[in-house]
Amino acid sequence: MDCDKIEAAEIAEKYATGALGETGRADFEIHFLGCRRCFEQVRLWQDMQAALPRRARRDWRWFAVLPVAASLLVVAGLAWFRMNAVEKREAARATASASPALDLTALAAVVPPRYTQPQWRAAGPTVFDVAIERYSRGDYSGATPDLVVAAKSDPANAAAAFFLGICYLVGSRDDEAIAQLKATIALGDSPELEEAHFYLAKALLRKRDFRGAVAELRLAEAMHGPRQAEERSLIAKIAPGAHSSP
Image 1 (tube, helix red, strand yellow):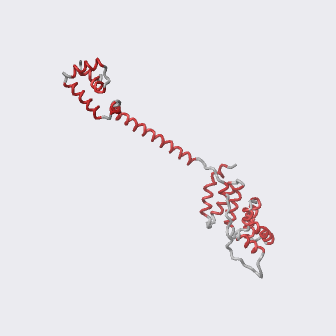
Image 2 (cartoon, one colour):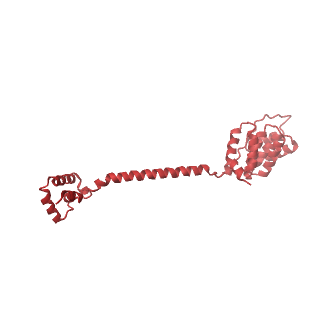
Image 3 (cartoon, rainbow, N blue to C red):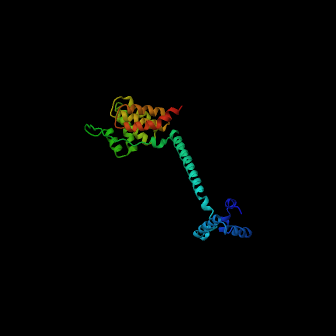
């Protein structure tokens, strides 16, 4: 028997693992008992078999392919990681570039402003004073009739028109609110002017008039009042809708 052919055919391994047929086993034993090279190969594989647990002896060949398998797993893992990272990056870009759906309910929500102006009374409380007292308690429906009277009796009273508009907004009477807030703005400079633009923008948002809302917010922002940050935030959120609306 030729040693090179024996090694190429893995005869020593097959002998040590019992995979060699009876005839081949007898022939090989005759050879390796007189061949130092093949004898050492047999001893090497027998020692390896002895060192393995019984169950693993049947699968000793896996040890030869484990490094290759591990390398393939690493390559596959890296490829998956890269593909997954690319997919996530592309998804993030798509999300960032897409225009988010506007939550008009949240954006147009109204928190009634407080009345903080000094109240100048004559002999007794006026209709406006009574209305504002109810308004300050959160009784917006109760304040509305007196504010209507106050606004009609004194058309130059910007506060009466403004807070009447707020009461209408709270009561979801948007068209009437818009009319009163525009009336407040038409009176010119007043303590209510900035907020009249702000709340008019809220009312226009409810009507899905994005361009009108942005225009009012820009006018309010230009006054550099206490709501400027909120106005800028609203503009940033609804400006895309203003550009896409007909």
